[in-house]
Length: 272
Ligand SMILES: Nc1ncnc2c1ncn2[C@@H]1O[C@H](COP(=O)(O)OP(=O)(O)OP(=O)(O)O)[C@@H](O)[C@H]1O
Ligand SMILES: [Mg+2]
Image 1: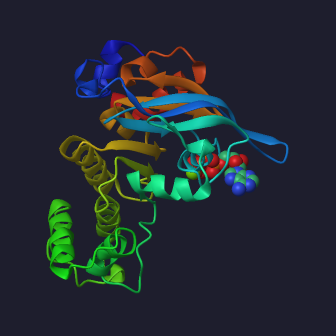
Image 2: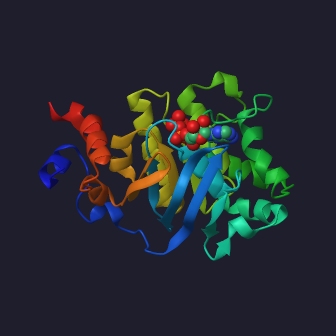
């Protein structure tokens, strides 16, 4: 797409989209491959996720995004290749060392994964008590209240998950991930199933997490316009291959026919 078309579609082509992103990778993937039976899902995937960036992995359904995500966080073992977090090779760690390292990561899942038997406050307090071993009730309450204020839902600590709307559940799920002060936050399809207004609210929250809390955000998404709107870097995955990656402008300028098709389809509704 040309720069004029890109601007008309709201794609950032200037330097502002990458302001504040350090060139230093916080996560690095080297030649990851993964097969199931005879089906190869990831094929020699190498990527660098810059520290403090918003990094989006986009691609069609069934193309290997979740397998890539699980391979990064160690929920799945790649057949070959390496995953590094800073200078530590995650793929070489023992299970116990990997669990300890995962304290630097937070996860925001599609269904928010709240515990239905606990109220909101208990959901948020859970990782503080169970993972960090915090016992001081007033400190726990203070931290829970701070997070609820940060997600703009103050005072809902006594509500039960079933009383919350889908968007509120997502925000509470995010607060629970943030309470551990992770260095990297992983989002698997943060906006799938939400209406466009709510999806934008969640996207904006990802931007706040990144800009206000300076947390690296790795997001897997079907929503290509949203990726172009908020991400500093985008990787296009197709059939297990990275077919384009870089800044939104780099990817938009890719001559790969599939990337061009995707962009035309994703942004065509804006060109009326
Ligand atoms: N545990 C598994 N065992 C066997 N095959 C698997 C497993 N996990 C994923 N696959 C296969 O790997 C391929 C990629 O799956 P993946 O879940 O990564 O796709 P995706 O890009 O996340 O799709 P979607 O956008 O629908 O979430 C699919 O063909 C899937 O069937
Ligand atoms: Mg998936």
